Amino acid sequence: MVKSFDEVLEKVRAGELKKVAVAVAQDEPVLEAVKEAKEKRIAEAILVGNEKEIKEIAAKIGMNVADYEIINEENPVKAALKAVELVSSGKADMVMKGLVDTANFLRSVLNKEVGLRTGKLMSHVAVFEIPKFERLIFMTDAAFNMYPDLKAKIDILNNSVKVAHAVGIDMPKVAPICAVEVVNPDMPATVDASILSKMSDRGQIKGCVVDGPLALDNALSQEAAAHKKVSGPVAGKADIMLLPNIEAANVMYKTLTYTTDCRNGGILVGTSAPVILTSRADSSETKLNSIALAALVAAAK
Image (cartoon, rainbow, N blue to C red):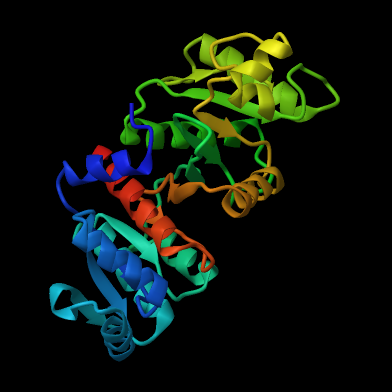
């Protein structure tokens, strides 16, 4: 089982080299990640955007632009659409957001003619390597779906399981995270968690083991689970944390990012090809990790 981002990168390098189309590529942190991805044989890239600005940034960071295909498109909206079209037409395997606002980027991803729609729910999956744990921790959804109902949670869960499978976790353990580990009718998230668990028991959710509701402590820590006398196949051993809403997930994502020495990456899935939707505040390492995750998901497809 893959337990670290070093192992993720090794797994990517062992496979067929994938290609990422970068939308509005004139962004220094993004180009740094793209440069490192090529140097480490994680992915090739097609750079779509203002060619003059791309070359200026490339010169600044020691990036040889002769190694990359550049498509000059100075209009950010058209550049984003072109990058998405490269993926939908099969010329690239995944698309990455550059110096373009998220709304316009996602409009291109969802474009009816050249976009990456599948009819399924899109969701964000973040992956964390936390020093305290000897496994990768997957978390969803911190960026896209705000207040998912039960049906949406099923889709979000299934999306995250596909990412875990692509990374190399054959039967991930999924914890629907709540404030408590018992079903309380006054707390809808606990009711959803119990239904998801029963659906898993009956084979309606496949490729994983779901058990909950679980509070965060007894989902991650076997010691905490034992102390609270919480048992089950997921207690203390969760690989995937399904958070109840975007506030809980986003706060947890940023808490882990800014208060721990973790490594992380994340992608948007539920599309016909992986979408790398990183924040401007994300480090080049996080962007590289996200490219690697997208490459594994693209290979699994």
